[in-house]
Picture 1 (cartoon, rainbow, N blue to C red):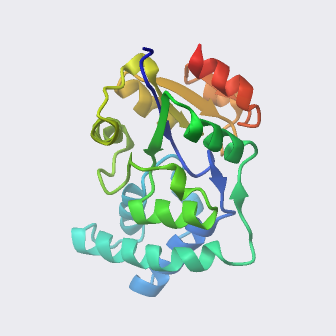
Picture 2: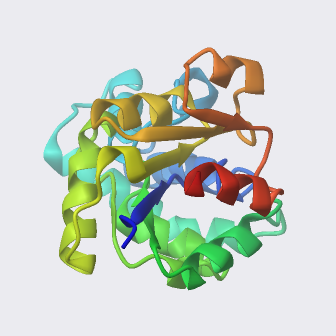
Length: 229
């Protein structure tokens, strides 16, 4: 019997684009909860975790980076996120994502979860909005650690608990749109798939030496050939 394959997905820029919904919710939460403004474009947030981002924003605007302030900021953000997701600036699942998730969902030996910088509640809000949350039964999130490189072991542990199976590194794939996704996959010895549907070009992602890189996820057959090879 062949060993099972595990796919661990990033969300923003990999599965979905929300046209700045999270970005706007972060800015509004800062203003509403703390009376402060910050241009989030000054923060190197792509591929980071929500908990890392809010800490950096607090530091940037001169507020104490305390557990209480982080909690207050994140609660404000999560309360505003549904409003921004439902605003006039409509996001979407990226090309090929629905077909790919559905194909993997039905596959007898491939399992999939999340490895994302989103808080668990934020991940659920975003993917429920785009009718894709039901594809994922476990994952690792910003609740687990503000450092993305810490998330891999949490995802692997939950995959083992959910499926009562060990997923070996050579059959585990981290899929994301930033160098941080590639780096966190390498930390646990996993294979990495970079996709240039976010803020980084294909050439920039290839320079990080992932196992493979795609311009997008529109070609389901090519993706499956890679992971089944």
